[in-house]
Length: 405
Image 1 (cartoon, helix red, strand yellow):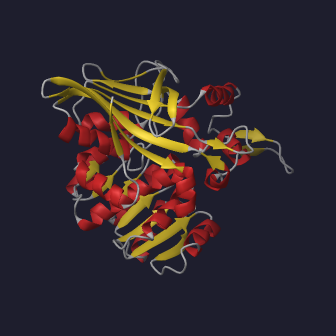
Image 2 (image 1 turned 180 degrees about the vertical axis):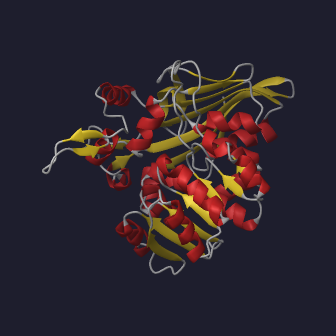
């Protein structure tokens, strides 16, 4: 396998450090708009000749397709933010490469009823091209991070091995992470966090289909394992709700994120001030007005999440809560994956949230390289057998857990 990794930020760098310990690939081209980031990621791997650095603009489809061809890459792994999903998705198809991402094409709220009806849903642009991929016998594995990704694998595992029927699947994400020295320092991309937290959340119900609610709706306290404890979680827009019902039978699917009151108020304030928008505004410059995106300014003012690991304390948990029946009796479980920041920093030099995101596409790539996972079309993680994935994740030294509720 020869991989083009686009994006050498926190997650992309973690991908290289995890993959460097595995023998399943021959080449990984690490490409970024900023060549210094790509070179730094490669330089940290102690001369592993399988890694090379390149510069590429993720929005330039022709340049990405050319880079795939020049290095003979048969897989494109997208580790950029969701703005670049579609150009990279199209570039992979034009070059005949398998495509893997960790977040899907962006949504657009319903123009008149944003908190009741879906407009353009997450992934709609990709699924609109599914027949093209299927006819070509090509695979686009979408939503293959931790959430979405591992959470979807958990849903498939629950449907196949733990339940006869499923009433509800609820992805629940929480942490007790703190960052020394900062009043506000998100552990993941603020650009992506604003996008998913301020958009109308999507809920799925079998008799109603997909519909939306208001941001931060339906708060609940969920007790997370391994010492994290109770965290208030709220509805957030996320790909799992759009992916799981396509392959897993369930009466209801939700995604709730443990954000905390202070974080929610900060996001609301950014929205009130218009600082969440991506539309450029004119800002004064030395030679006249300069167009800038307010959201990009917010991101530039905050610390890079990839560099926070040394100041972070605590654990992060991603998981899937499932309620249904087994052998005629009610059953309720929480399948989860916890990463301790102290462990990920000591073992890989990566903070917990980016490491947890990065390990999952690497596991998927290894399964694709071995032929254990295969398919054609635009497919989510729940379209593939779960057990081989979970076994390999454990082999990577990061076991998952199951708690009866």
